[in-house]
Structure formats: C-alpha cells, structure tokens
Image 1 (cartoon, rainbow, N blue to C red):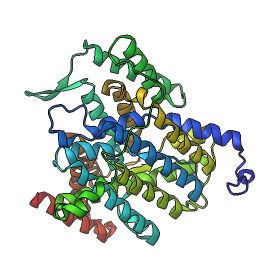
Image 2: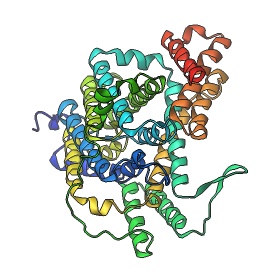
Image 3: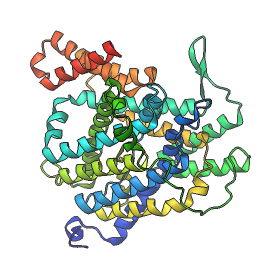
Image 4: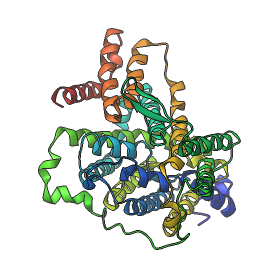
Length: 443
C-alpha cells in the first residue's frame, strides 16, 4: 500500500493520512444533515405529498454516494479528495427543479443520472477540457460566487432570519424568536471557530448548536444514538421511472436545461476543487494535474451512483483542503473519509432530529467560502463585469441557478462584441448564447 500511494515520494505516512481523512470527514459531515433536509423540502410546508422526498432514504443515499465517490477517488486517482452530494446543486435540485419548475423529484433524479452519464463520456473522451476552456474564467468564478449567495440566502430564509414581506419582498425576521436566536448563536459560534482555524468548525458548530437546542427544547432529543440504517427503497432506482414509464416527460426544454445545468455546475465545481486541493498538496506538475482523467471518472461514477440511490449530483469537496492541511497527501485519506461515511449510516437517530435552524449556519458559511472567487474577476473591464455581475445577482434574486447562468451567458457575447473583443469569444459561447436565448423565449 505504501508503494501504491507513494508514501516515501510524497513524504507521508499512515498516521498523517488517517488524521487527514478524519479531518476532511469532520469538515464535510454537515452534508449528512443538510442534504436530506434540502432535498426533502421539509422546510417548505403545504406542498403535495408527492413533492417530498423521504428524508431517511436521502440520508442513506447521501452517505452511500459520498462513501463510493471518496473511495473511488482514493483508489483510482490517488488524490486526498473526498466527494459528496454538492451544496448548490442540491439547492438547484430542490428549490428550482422541483419547487419552481414543478418537475417531480423522480425526473430530477433522471436529470442527475443523465448528467453523470454524459460526464463519464466527456471525461473519457477529452471533450470536457474543450468545453471548460471555451468558457471564460471570469464566468466560471461568477457561477461559484452566485451559487454561494444563493446558498446563503436559502440558509437565512430557512432559519427565518430573512422573511418574506409583501411590501418590500423580503425583510429582517423576528430576532427575538428562540429558533432564530438559536441560528444566530450557531452562526457566531461557527464563525469564531472558522476564524480560529479549527478543523471541522462547521461540523462542530452544528453539533454544539444542536445540543444547545436540545437543552432549551428547541430541538427534539433523539430516542437513541445508534440505530438501524434507513431504507433507500423510497428513492432507489426512481431515476429510471421516467425512462421506462414516461419517456415523453424527458423530451422537454426544461428537462434539457436541468441536465445541462447539473452538468455545467458539476463540471466547474469539480475542476476548481481538483486544482485547488492539488495545488495546496503540492501535487500539480508543470501547472497540470496528473491523473486528471481518473479523478473526473471517479467523480462522474459517484454522480451516477448517487442518482440511482436517490440524491443530487455528487462532486469533489473543497473541504478536502482541511485534510490536506492536516497532512493528507494520498488517496488513502480519501478512502478513510469514505469509510467514515459508511460508519455514519448507523447514527441516523441522532442526525435525523437536526432542524433547519441548526443547519442554516452551515449554509451561510459555505456561501461565504464560495464567494471568495469574486476577487478573481476583473471588475475594471466593464464587458467582463456586466455578465459576471448578472450571473451572480440573478441566482438569489430569481431563486434559480440556471436563470443566473443563462442571463450572464447571454450578455457575455454581446458585451465582448461591442468592446471589440469578438475574436476572444469561443464559438461554443455563441452556441450557448443561442441555447439560453431560446430558453427564455420558449419558456
């Protein structure tokens, strides 16, 4: 094993890799709570029963997808990068596809499945690099920042820190409400730990907030700590329902937009994370990422596995940098993280009682981390600033990641042509311009 993972060459050992894998798990374990709450739409009352996913099934699917993805990444690509259902993509799945488009969650899972299968083909063929290179870096950064704002807005809304207002659309909620105060406590606590550089600060913040909520009867006390693993029966294989029973439901422009959005966001989320973690770990060689194809293949297989199990797109997690900071340098750390996700399946009784007021700080903090890409956008060039700004601002204001991407990508060729930079626009961007323009005209 030491030879396979090149311990001596990378200056690591079993202890460092195990600690690194554990640190990464603690940094991203919040997804086990946040993802089931997000996809189940539990925080949105009054919907028809068929729109709600089974929270227990989503929990199990989340852990399974994270475990398989992380282990595959460790074995195939040998990188200390863990995977799990992605933040932002799960919000798009729940709040845009299911809630706004009113597409059944079963068909939404089909969209995730298709995007994963396409991603496998693109990863194996090399087409992926061509598409990524065609889209300007500024728009890639804008997408990440926009998703960060969207996630933060969802966290503020779910916790009732921000509430709807018929006169001014939104306003500040009742800060004297005990549940809102619980979220504020959790947010301050998590911020303090993150500033102090405490590994797993988001996870610990949720844990302490949950305990505080139980003490003040704001969070239910679980009946047990360890219990049986929730069944995946309500969601397992649901992605195939439309393929075999209602294929006409897949022949719509909306479904195409859903697949493309899942594919697009996973594209750049994965690429950015791989480069970020590899840079921190000193694994880049001549500004290139060795074994990139295997890393992308592991990511895409994990997405397909997650879709079949019953969860949104699985992607590489930037929280893996926490494990790298703790010493991880090889795929063994990712394998350790994957095994810990499998063990977490037995702790559903504890995780199932966590409320949205406990998870909201995690959403808000993840949003803070994601908007850091704003600094990489050249705001001094107006032809760049306009489309980037529209991507960022349109996501939270329209409550749709897809709409934000579409608006920004429509403006980009226009501003570049007017600025006399027509030769800098890749032909693929003109193709995307046509696609998104048709999206607004016909939908």
